Amino acid sequence: MCDAYAQALADEIRAAGTIYGIVGSDRWTGRSARFVRGAISDWQGSAHDAEGSLRGLASQLRRAADELTLAQTDWQRRSDRYEAAVRDRARWGRT
Image (cartoon, rainbow, N blue to C red; front, side):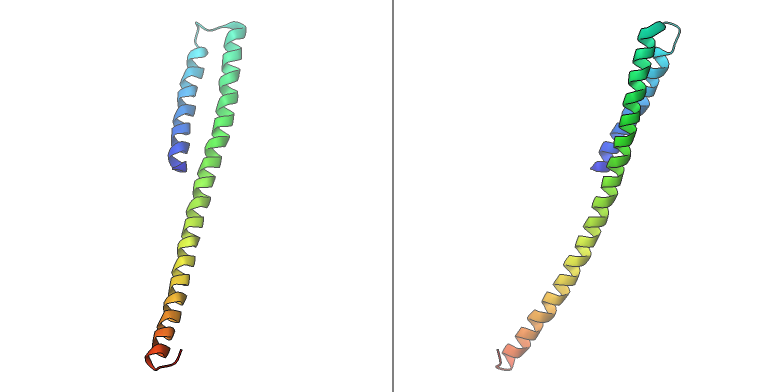
């Protein structure tokens, strides 16, 4: 999910680049053009940082899920051994 959000944000950053180019055209001049271009640049910088953070979060979540899967597998293996030992003892009349 984080990867999807990061990709959507990257698409928005590219779209903002198109707007930045349009503002730089001949029709936009003066202080208003500089203001809009500055605002777009600032937003792109912040959005780019957020995209990187989302991708990092996605990576951390994948690693945590992998570690949890390994821990659950290990626990299940130990639990199965314990239950087998209990069954064996019960079979021989010992508890």
